[in-house]
Image (cartoon, rainbow, N blue to C red; front, side):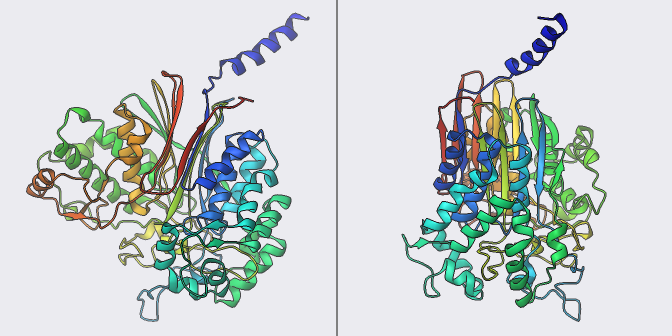
Length: 558
């Protein structure tokens, strides 16, 4: 063989051989059927990106209260062959007819419920375009194959669980107000009983069109016609131009470090990555594991307070506002913030420069995928409120989001979650609302973590606590089960799950000036995968608070 040809073959061969491969594939998602869908696609020869498409689509069917084709999300990808990392931004966009006073009355007051229920609350969905984009650019299988499990679930149905019943009860009035949604998700206008099978033939047909035609199968043709007719008849403001104009955006993820661990996380319009890195930068100045529990909670709360203050003031869609990401995530800036923290006394939020806390979706979902080649995906998806807007256009099978509530309808006025927003997140045509979704990779000396969670404004602090568990050497079951607490600057309250803080810790925190509030129920639904390189194993865990499933499976690496 010619020497130059031999050298070329050697150059091409070496990187491929140098790529380290995990001993197993793993998927963790919020529903057992979605996890099974992902493994089905891996077994069919797909990679992690194909599996993520399958899991996302399956969740759209079996978790209609959390995500769907009528919503959007962020997919954080890493391709093992060349190390490429990218965030696929499939976040929804405001309709082109939207304006800053869309939800205000003649006197300038916010009209209750207008940004939450019904067609006017819905932004233009991004998930269908994102699934088509990921399959075409990063996947190995045809989109139709990766959507096949979701199509099957939509046709054959899935059984109502207790969690489904709780979510449907919470949004009963909104679902009843939409005839198509009521027929699909209720039984005779009431919450279905346990075991009732939810079948979605219209959604199956919509998924089939998406599989055959790619994104044009959703944003044009029969599906688009059904969406536009339904939204228009119900008082919404969507147009054909809105659907034709929607584009997925590929963004460079944010990167930072914490005590030797490399953090890769979501970029704006997610507020999660900026706030996560800022909090970790602040906490890196303390010997975390050597601290007493009360000190850890106090210092983490103070880091949360400061990160959420900056989140409110500066963050929004980078296509519309200048977001000072570099400054906010600079360790030197974190050192300045740390210097203002009293280790023994809470800082009242009113003592910090005035700002308004920005909103974030509440009922969301997450999936984490690792394949045998080392490709990985962390994706957090949402339709905002449980069951989104509650509105389904006739004939589409698509439950629409209410992500317009994630904008600031009016500075200083709370949204559905009691959060208020600032000018950076004001409504504007074509703009993407700020989000808390924080899909994250953590690479350390001994392995890689893939994690994320739903939970609205609490998403970022849950991911923070999960990262701290990983950095302390604990396994995924500990990350997802860890008791949680949260502070978001405004309201000036330290919230915590039942049983998360011992009585003695609570007493000491009160003495330090914190106002405590125990939540009525636990929150979050973290899904995590860990590739333990040192131990030569892969572990996965699904949050015990939810009904998800994490599975590790052996199989061929190609």
